[in-house]
Amino acid sequence: MTETSSRQEKTPATISRPRIKLVALNARYTHSCLALFYIRNELAVHLPEMEVEILQLTINDNSYESLLRITADEPFGVFFSAAIWNSNKIAELAADVRACLPDCRIVVGGPEAGVLRDKLPLKCCSMVIGDIEAVDSQFYRDLISGQLQDTYQGRFLKLQDKVLGYPFRDEDFAGPLKNRHIYYESSRGCPYSCTYCLSATERGLYHKDIEQVQAELEHILSYNPRVVRFVDRTFNDLPERALAIWKFLLSCDCDTLFHFEIAPDRFTQEMFEFLETVGPNRFQFEIGIQSTNPGTLEAINRRMDIGRVGPIIEKIESLETIHLHVDLILGLPYETRESFADSFRAVFAMGAHYIQMGLLKILPDTPICHGANEYGYVHSVHPPYPVFANNWLNCSQMSVLYWFCECVEKFHNNRYFVSLWRYLRHQGGDIFSFFQLLLQEGGKVGLLQRAATQELLCEILVKVASERSDCSRICELLRYDWLRCGFRKLPSCLEHVAGEESMEMSRDILYQSLPEELTDMYTTQSRNQFFKRSVFLKLSGEVTTFLGLPGSGNAAVRVAVVQEREKTIHAHNRVFVVGEVGNGQTD
Image (cartoon, rainbow, N blue to C red; front, top):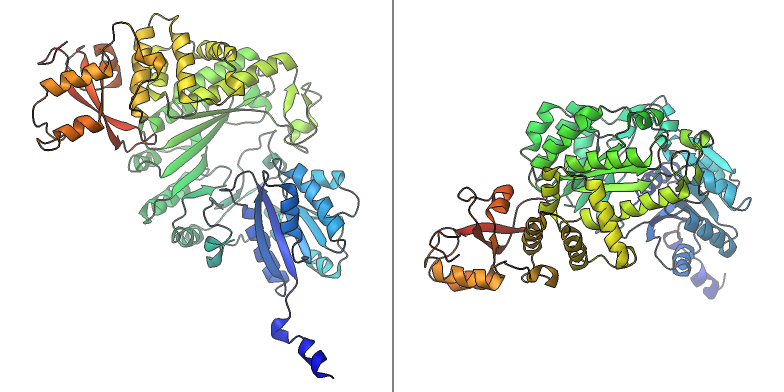
């Protein structure tokens, strides 16, 4: 052997291992794909000689640049995780990877794998239907040999000996999980069988041992992630177990926000008592109500005691520390325009902070998909499979309600007008009609086609309120909410209201009338700084009483809005009553 050839020969230490890339196309950069970490661990067991790289992209990334990152270094294999939000792009990338790397093993898994099997060219890739933990070991032998079958299937919940391992490693938190939400499952399966959901096709539930859950969470929380989202379909299906996990989480020294999908009718008194001890921005609940129409709930096989739901949500909301996200679905069977309006009225009255109303999606291979003809469904055959019409709503009626839902999204699902919504709930008027008026007025200025700034929304609210007998009260609440959001000046639509005291006038009156020192507010030395940093507002006795601010009967007051946040989920600026009108202050 020549000296040159000897130098070119690679030693065992320099021979690179075959690489498999696990690819996710997340909806946002902050999201992460839990499935990739499970796949990585299964590959480590069955093919330890492989080097595995997790590559998390987003659906908004440039397609060509994504392809370059996937095909860089010519990987031995590429695995994709396909869901309804990314399956079209996955199909494009899989075909492009095959064109660039003819010998690459391409595998597609995830909820949309079965659909893509029928869309992609024959032999483009292999599909894994179900759970990677339950796939037969033949899959890994075929992967190595290059003789992959078209389809492999595995159902974790059907396994005789079910073991759901921990998906993460130490290096993940400085790598693919850095600055991302952590998705974690303490259980798999769902106690419900809603006909529109993929879970309806499976039976069974698996819960990790509580000791295993605590050990895994302790490891995750040692890295102090910003958000941990439990992907358990119904986290509190076993209330005592859920409570034990909550108590453990609260005992951990971290600032993490925890997100749970909750069934409201499975709350216990012990759970409520515990939640009273939870501070703001620690727990977030997502509650799927879907409809309050009994006929609809029966048709979709949604078993829920609606009579219990309202009081439970109201009780949680009253804590002001737990963010409540409630879901309604537009387009369900037997849901007419009138019953959908009733569902919205009922959910609004419960006081949830976020009301998400999305179109029904006719997911392939779900019971509602198989019964689509019975219900007269007209829907898209492309992801995310939105419904266009059914036996109870034609296309025109569906579109009107869709835009109504978008209007609610823009006005309600933020921190802008919290006091106003509470006031309207208290008044008990027809809130569905109120939002219809907002939609009508918003249409005149192109609301749904432009950025919904707080000022634009406020202008529309003022116009709609101008036709009401309580217009002045609503405008007071809008000013109050505006300043609590941190603004120092009112928008023009709220600034010039006949007969109202200006903020400058309120400040001047208070500066002249308040003492040199005010307990818990300012000292003689900090008085000028207090007036410089705060904004001031006069509130009527009626509004003061409604807001629960301390006052004297129906007396009007002047308040200071200071540059300090409340310890509540909305984190509004704090408000203090600094004087009653007529009590040593100029009217």
